Amino acid sequence: PSTHVRDSVIEAGCAPIKATIVPSGIDLDYFSPGPGPASSSFRVLFAGHVSQRKGVGTLLEAWKAAALSNAELIIAGSLPTGFDWRPHLSPNVRLAGHQTRSELRDLYQTCHCLAFPTMIEGLANVVLEAMACGCCVVTTPASGVGDWLKNGENGILLHPQNIEAWAETLRRLAADPSVAERLGRAGVRTAQNFSLKSYGERLMRVLDELLK
Image (cartoon, rainbow, N blue to C red; front, side, top):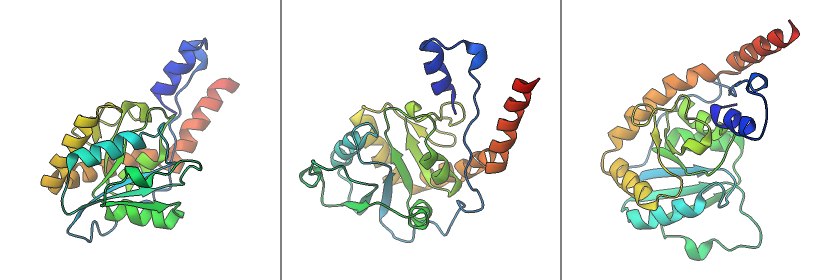
Protein backbone atom coordinates (compact mmCIF):
# COMPACT_ATOMS: atom_id res chain seq x y z
CA PRO A 1 0.00 0.00 0.00
CA SER A 2 2.96 2.38 0.33
CA THR A 3 6.64 2.88 -0.47
CA HIS A 4 7.35 2.24 3.20
CA VAL A 5 5.94 -1.30 2.88
CA ARG A 6 7.53 -1.89 -0.52
CA ASP A 7 10.96 -0.99 0.83
CA SER A 8 10.41 -3.30 3.81
CA VAL A 9 9.57 -6.36 1.69
CA ILE A 10 12.48 -5.68 -0.67
CA GLU A 11 14.80 -5.41 2.33
CA ALA A 12 13.42 -8.78 3.48
CA GLY A 13 14.47 -10.36 0.18
CA CYS A 14 11.64 -9.78 -2.29
CA ALA A 15 12.76 -8.94 -5.84
CA PRO A 16 11.94 -5.27 -6.58
CA ILE A 17 10.12 -6.23 -9.79
CA LYS A 18 7.65 -8.25 -7.70
CA ALA A 19 6.80 -5.41 -5.32
CA THR A 20 4.20 -2.97 -6.65
CA ILE A 21 2.58 -0.13 -4.73
CA VAL A 22 -1.23 -0.06 -4.75
CA PRO A 23 -2.43 2.54 -2.20
CA SER A 24 -5.65 1.89 -0.31
CA GLY A 25 -8.94 3.60 -1.02
CA ILE A 26 -11.72 4.93 1.20
CA ASP A 27 -15.40 5.80 0.73
CA LEU A 28 -15.26 9.49 -0.14
CA ASP A 29 -19.04 9.72 -0.31
CA TYR A 30 -19.15 8.81 3.37
CA PHE A 31 -15.98 10.45 4.67
CA SER A 32 -16.33 14.07 3.66
CA PRO A 33 -16.06 17.50 5.34
CA GLY A 34 -18.68 18.36 7.94
CA PRO A 35 -19.52 21.50 9.90
CA GLY A 36 -16.13 21.69 11.60
CA PRO A 37 -15.41 22.02 15.33
CA ALA A 38 -18.52 23.18 17.16
CA SER A 39 -16.76 23.90 20.44
CA SER A 40 -14.51 26.84 21.23
CA SER A 41 -12.05 24.44 22.85
CA PHE A 42 -9.19 22.94 20.86
CA ARG A 43 -10.08 19.30 20.16
CA VAL A 44 -7.48 16.67 19.29
CA LEU A 45 -8.36 13.13 18.27
CA PHE A 46 -6.45 9.86 18.42
CA ALA A 47 -8.17 7.00 16.57
CA GLY A 48 -6.94 3.43 16.61
CA HIS A 49 -6.05 0.56 18.91
CA VAL A 50 -4.73 2.03 22.14
CA SER A 51 -1.18 0.66 22.28
CA GLN A 52 2.44 1.69 22.41
CA ARG A 53 2.88 0.60 18.77
CA LYS A 54 0.34 3.24 17.79
CA GLY A 55 2.30 5.81 19.78
CA VAL A 56 -0.28 6.45 22.49
CA GLY A 57 2.43 6.73 25.14
CA THR A 58 4.18 9.45 23.14
CA LEU A 59 0.93 11.31 22.64
CA LEU A 60 -0.05 11.24 26.32
CA GLU A 61 3.40 12.48 27.38
CA ALA A 62 3.32 15.21 24.72
CA TRP A 63 -0.18 16.25 25.76
CA LYS A 64 0.93 16.56 29.37
CA ALA A 65 4.02 18.56 28.33
CA ALA A 66 1.98 20.88 26.11
CA ALA A 67 -0.13 21.87 29.14
CA LEU A 68 -2.94 23.27 27.00
CA SER A 69 -5.84 25.14 28.51
CA ASN A 70 -9.33 25.00 27.00
CA ALA A 71 -8.39 21.85 25.07
CA GLU A 72 -9.46 18.21 24.96
CA LEU A 73 -7.71 15.04 23.79
CA ILE A 74 -10.12 12.29 22.74
CA ILE A 75 -8.74 8.73 22.64
CA ALA A 76 -11.06 6.74 20.36
CA GLY A 77 -10.25 3.05 20.23
CA SER A 78 -10.37 -0.27 22.04
CA LEU A 79 -8.41 -0.36 25.28
CA PRO A 80 -6.00 -3.23 25.96
CA THR A 81 -6.72 -5.55 28.84
CA GLY A 82 -4.31 -5.91 31.72
CA PHE A 83 -3.16 -2.29 31.80
CA ASP A 84 -4.79 0.67 33.50
CA TRP A 85 -4.26 3.85 31.47
CA ARG A 86 -6.12 6.12 33.90
CA PRO A 87 -3.14 7.07 36.12
CA HIS A 88 -1.36 8.31 32.97
CA LEU A 89 -4.17 10.63 31.87
CA SER A 90 -4.39 14.38 32.30
CA PRO A 91 -7.77 15.77 33.39
CA ASN A 92 -8.59 16.95 29.86
CA VAL A 93 -8.09 13.52 28.25
CA ARG A 94 -11.22 11.50 27.45
CA LEU A 95 -11.18 7.77 26.81
CA ALA A 96 -14.00 7.39 24.28
CA GLY A 97 -13.54 3.65 23.70
CA HIS A 98 -14.52 1.83 20.53
CA GLN A 99 -16.40 4.02 18.04
CA THR A 100 -18.84 3.02 15.34
CA ARG A 101 -18.12 4.12 11.77
CA SER A 102 -20.58 7.01 12.04
CA GLU A 103 -19.30 8.08 15.46
CA LEU A 104 -15.74 8.11 14.15
CA ARG A 105 -16.77 10.21 11.15
CA ASP A 106 -18.43 12.71 13.52
CA LEU A 107 -15.18 12.97 15.47
CA TYR A 108 -13.13 13.53 12.32
CA GLN A 109 -15.52 16.28 11.29
CA THR A 110 -15.59 18.08 14.64
CA CYS A 111 -11.99 17.84 15.87
CA HIS A 112 -9.26 20.27 14.90
CA CYS A 113 -6.67 17.58 14.27
CA LEU A 114 -5.90 13.88 14.30
CA ALA A 115 -2.73 13.10 16.29
CA PHE A 116 -1.44 9.69 15.23
CA PRO A 117 2.17 9.05 16.35
CA THR A 118 2.28 5.46 15.13
CA MET A 119 5.56 3.55 14.94
CA ILE A 120 4.60 1.18 12.11
CA GLU A 121 1.76 0.86 9.60
CA GLY A 122 1.17 -0.29 6.04
CA LEU A 123 -1.01 2.67 5.14
CA ALA A 124 -3.18 3.97 7.96
CA ASN A 125 -6.79 4.32 6.81
CA VAL A 126 -7.57 6.60 9.76
CA VAL A 127 -5.22 9.16 8.21
CA LEU A 128 -7.02 9.04 4.86
CA GLU A 129 -10.45 9.18 6.52
CA ALA A 130 -9.51 12.14 8.70
CA MET A 131 -8.05 14.04 5.74
CA ALA A 132 -11.18 13.40 3.68
CA CYS A 133 -13.25 14.91 6.50
CA GLY A 134 -11.10 18.05 6.66
CA CYS A 135 -9.37 17.14 9.92
CA CYS A 136 -5.75 18.27 10.04
CA VAL A 137 -3.44 15.24 10.30
CA VAL A 138 -0.34 15.13 12.49
CA THR A 139 1.39 11.77 12.07
CA THR A 140 4.70 10.05 11.35
CA PRO A 141 6.44 8.77 8.22
CA ALA A 142 5.85 5.27 9.63
CA SER A 143 2.11 5.67 8.96
CA GLY A 144 2.83 4.97 5.28
CA VAL A 145 1.84 8.43 4.04
CA GLY A 146 5.32 9.69 3.11
CA ASP A 147 4.57 9.38 -0.62
CA TRP A 148 1.94 12.10 -0.57
CA LEU A 149 1.69 13.85 2.81
CA LYS A 150 4.01 16.84 2.57
CA ASN A 151 5.03 18.34 5.89
CA GLY A 152 3.51 21.79 6.33
CA GLU A 153 1.51 21.60 3.09
CA ASN A 154 -1.31 19.09 3.66
CA GLY A 155 -0.43 17.80 7.11
CA ILE A 156 2.41 17.57 9.63
CA LEU A 157 5.02 14.79 9.92
CA LEU A 158 6.94 14.22 13.14
CA HIS A 159 9.26 11.57 14.55
CA PRO A 160 7.12 9.09 16.51
CA GLN A 161 9.12 9.39 19.74
CA ASN A 162 10.04 13.08 19.79
CA ILE A 163 7.79 14.11 22.66
CA GLU A 164 8.89 17.77 22.66
CA ALA A 165 8.23 18.13 18.91
CA TRP A 166 4.72 16.72 19.40
CA ALA A 167 4.11 19.00 22.38
CA GLU A 168 5.33 22.08 20.49
CA THR A 169 3.16 21.20 17.47
CA LEU A 170 0.09 20.84 19.68
CA ARG A 171 0.84 24.22 21.28
CA ARG A 172 1.26 25.88 17.88
CA LEU A 173 -1.99 24.49 16.48
CA ALA A 174 -3.93 25.36 19.64
CA ALA A 175 -2.56 28.92 19.58
CA ASP A 176 -3.55 29.37 15.92
CA PRO A 177 -6.34 26.97 14.84
CA SER A 178 -6.33 28.59 11.38
CA VAL A 179 -3.16 26.58 10.65
CA ALA A 180 -5.08 23.36 11.29
CA GLU A 181 -7.94 24.63 9.14
CA ARG A 182 -5.59 25.40 6.23
CA LEU A 183 -3.90 22.02 6.43
CA GLY A 184 -7.27 20.34 6.77
CA ARG A 185 -8.55 21.95 3.56
CA ALA A 186 -5.40 20.85 1.73
CA GLY A 187 -5.89 17.36 3.14
CA VAL A 188 -9.38 17.15 1.65
CA ARG A 189 -7.92 17.84 -1.80
CA THR A 190 -5.24 15.18 -1.30
CA ALA A 191 -7.76 12.58 -0.14
CA GLN A 192 -9.67 12.83 -3.42
CA ASN A 193 -6.92 10.72 -5.00
CA PHE A 194 -7.81 7.78 -2.75
CA SER A 195 -11.37 6.88 -3.64
CA LEU A 196 -12.49 3.26 -3.75
CA LYS A 197 -12.89 3.64 -7.51
CA SER A 198 -9.28 4.82 -7.88
CA TYR A 199 -8.12 1.93 -5.73
CA GLY A 200 -9.96 -0.54 -7.94
CA GLU A 201 -8.53 1.00 -11.10
CA ARG A 202 -4.97 0.88 -9.72
CA LEU A 203 -5.41 -2.75 -8.70
CA MET A 204 -6.82 -3.74 -12.08
CA ARG A 205 -3.88 -2.14 -13.88
CA VAL A 206 -1.49 -4.23 -11.82
CA LEU A 207 -3.48 -7.41 -12.47
CA ASP A 208 -3.62 -6.65 -16.20
CA GLU A 209 0.17 -6.33 -16.27
CA LEU A 210 0.56 -9.64 -14.48
CA LEU A 211 -1.70 -11.40 -16.98
CA LYS A 212 0.13 -10.14 -20.07
